[in-house]
Image (cartoon, helix red, strand yellow):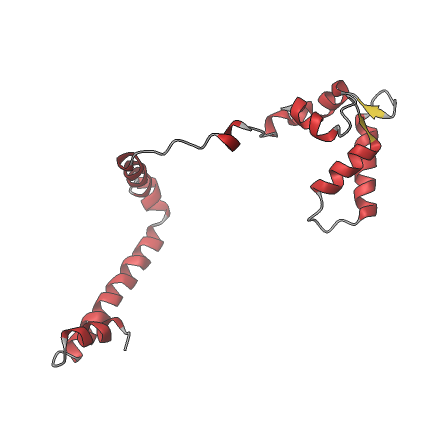
Length: 152
């Protein structure tokens, strides 16, 4: 993971990251944020001088590794997922996973109020639909259905 990230920062493939490469990478990473160029350069300078432990003016891979070692578990770079799509699950498996999720006791308990509201509004819709059909019972069937659904 870190070798891949280091190669991204090392534009000239020199085996070290200099301040210019650090600034350009930070600028690209923060392009869509509201940071101004001055802020980006300050951020890049701060990160660079913190990482450049031997003060050589360039960051070696060892220095890069040492500064990012505490965060290595948070880096999620998996190019395999970019090229190989996930295998599709069979429909029965998908249905089984959904029913296990949405009909579990935990889900029903956590969403009890929402489920009651959905049932209430569904029953209210059915009631209004049948009232519309009943009110227009002396007309054509298509008109009855349309009026019951509130479309005319």
